[in-house]
Image (cartoon, rainbow, N blue to C red):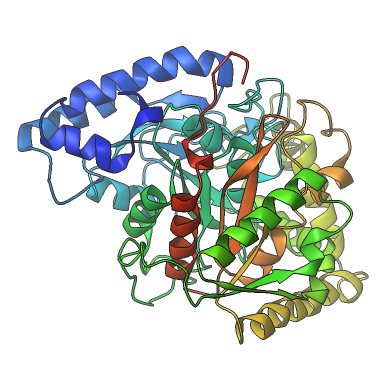
Length: 487
């Protein structure tokens, strides 16, 4: 099955017609992974034996013709807990962690009949924008293996973009689904905060983390979000709001839709080619019948410092549990309990994780709490109000996903501030708990450009309608990379 030439509906039809069995599909998927992933390095662990057994069981009972996801292989970011399958968060700290329970999203995918083929590489504990902070390997961009795939869900994006799987799950704390989706020319969605359960997601910043799907097109993405959304009593931040079918009315178009374009999203730091691609996208929406106006989000410029204070503070609290005692890495040559803590954390965490723990601990300390954490929380409220003011009059906000296209491996990893600024366009969405989507909108020097759509809370349906309309009016989503060749 060539995933570049089909989609979830196409594979489902082939399974229902018995043009191929679920077992054949699963075996072909593993064969493709073993071939292509030598160049991409997206997978950290494969789940071959269990996946084939599940495929055989589905073949035995028959594929449910009313469930498009039944029997479809899927990849999972390695900070989502999977029972009986190693979950490392790409960290030495959890190099041998074999969970005894599933994340809620994994139970939901299991109910939908999807087959987990393996765990995908990421920045360590989701801290990074390039998947270069992983302890184990450096994932490459599907379009050019000398460039980064983005992060922290770089493995998930590269696996989908390189045609190894049709769908993958990632997590997004400050742009970690949308940015790698943009860099790899695919569709990535960060749902409204609370739409998808965080139970079983290894926590980075609890007030912003959200699990979401990465796919090759908008309709497939809506199908995936249908499967993983919903209230979960094990997650107190999970919303009880009813989940609509995001594929219903997805083809209704954007006629009459009011779209806002923040002038702050076209600052000097955004590449000229990206600005031009987004302006062309705006013209496409206008041709399709939408009304587009320029607006202002004045506090969005403070998004990066606010995010790195709040997210690092939450991380310093969340990562206390990794102490070398209960599970994961424990240092050798220790003389007392303090040695266990200090040496296990010193040797188990990478530089970026330590940097954020230190920043967060400093921000929460007695002498600096008011000046840093409290002030950041206040400015976060102002960023939320900016969005509320715009959404009082508009249905959708559009702009670029990233200021640049994918950059070279090793090019920015030693400059943390520059790396942090990569997320300047995506971070405000997480601070405000809004849904955001990145979808392909063009190319610059043969590398993909991402268009970002932002909707009001729990209005993913609006985002999907607009994304689907844009996709149908353009051909960017039909392009695919030549793995290991010249694009």
